[in-house]
Image (tube, rainbow, N blue to C red):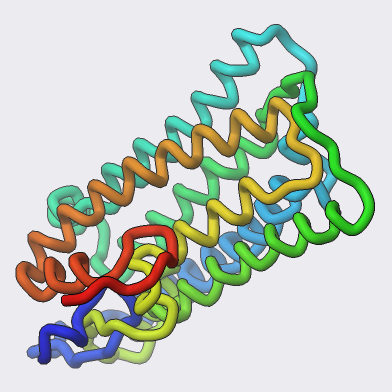
Length: 268
């Protein structure tokens, strides 16, 4: 593969070298049901998250919640986001996966990761505490413009998942492959589309979605600041992993393409 074609972006499928031992019919059906239900749980969680952040169409948003003391609100809200950050930082690492897949089947590893993530986010939605105060409130065309920027960010997030391989990212492909009795496939990374503009378009999309709001309450600001901090930290961890996996090809990609803001490609 040529150096310039490798990046942490879209996935080009490559067959595994050997086919695993045939699984039982019960195992295959269970895996398919588990993976499918987990994927549906993800879709529900993703759609609710859009409403939770934007303040639209859901019963409870980032601006709502029980009115409690400032310390309790920060501990509960920050605790939920910290739990999400710890889970992602640990469960996404290859060292953890190697140990974890000695306990759980490899084809269910990603679905379990997604299930735990969605459970944590659902807990956050339910437990979120109200923080009083508003920093700004915009009305009229400017408000709709900010809503548009926010949903444009969510669109970038969704598109970026498909450029990576949406169904593998959320575990469904692995369970379907297992159900069909086919070997699990390894992944190679190719540089294309949004990943030619920034190395982490998915995170760029999240930042647009979180910061672009016509009404910035203290609750929304606290959520956004904590998420932004984790995004910046998580990118550094992920970059080290990608350099370790791909070596010079990724280093070349990193020299040429901005990390987060689409400010133009740099010379090689």
